[in-house]
Length: 247
Ligand code: SF4
Image (cartoon, rainbow, N blue to C red; front, side, top):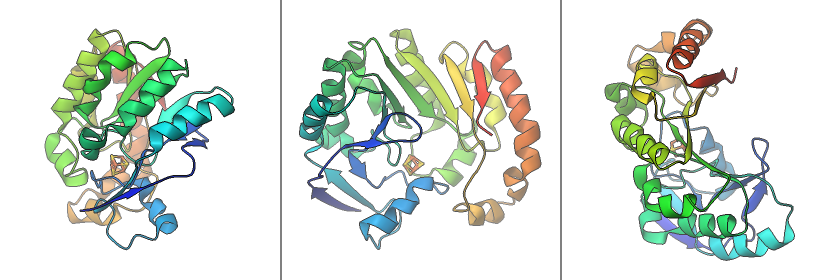
C-alpha cells in the first residue's frame, strides 16, 4: 500500500450530486471491484492498482476553513470518490476535522461511507442541525460482499453502525448501489435504523470479470435490476423505509 502525503490546492469541488464534494483522500483502500472512482487514476498518474495507493491531503481542514469563508453555502457530500472513513482516517483524522469546520460554520453535510469509524464523530455530527450519514450496503449476504468488497467492513458492522447513529438522533440512509444478489435481505435488517433508502444498478464495466468468474452475470442484466429492484423498493416501503430507485 503506497501512502503519499500531499498538499491540495482546493477541497470543496463542485458536484453534480450535491452542491459540493469533499474528498480528503485520493484513492481508497477498500478497493471494491465495481468502484466507479477508479477513473481518478487518469488524473493522478498512479500506476498501482486501485486500492493499492492513497494520497492524503494533509491540508484538507485548513482549506475547508478558508473556502467556507469565500464560497456560497451549500450541501457538502463527504466524499464521492473515496471512502472518507477508510483505514487511514484513523491516523490522519482529516474527515473528522473537515466535518468540524463545516458544522461549526453551519454548512449542511451528507456523509457516505462503508466504515463504522464514522461513529467516532457522533459528537461532532450531533452539533449539526442538517447532517445525515449514509452507508453503502450492496447486499445482506456477507459471502457476496467478500467477493465484491473484500477490503471493506462486513455488512453487519455497517448495519449496527446505522442503528447506533439513528438511535443518537442522526438522520441516516442506506445506498444500495450497485444492488447485488442478496440485497433482498436488507429491508428486514435495516428496519428502524434508516430514514430512507436509495437503490441503483451496476452502471460501469469494472466488475464484469468478477460477475463472470462467480457465475453471476444474470445479476448485471437489465431484468435483474427491473424486477428485483422493484421488489426491493416495495420491501423497503413495507418495512416503513421510504425508498427511491435511481434508474
Ligand atoms: S468504498 Fe467506495 S470509493 Fe472506496 S473503493 Fe469502495 S466503492 Fe470505491
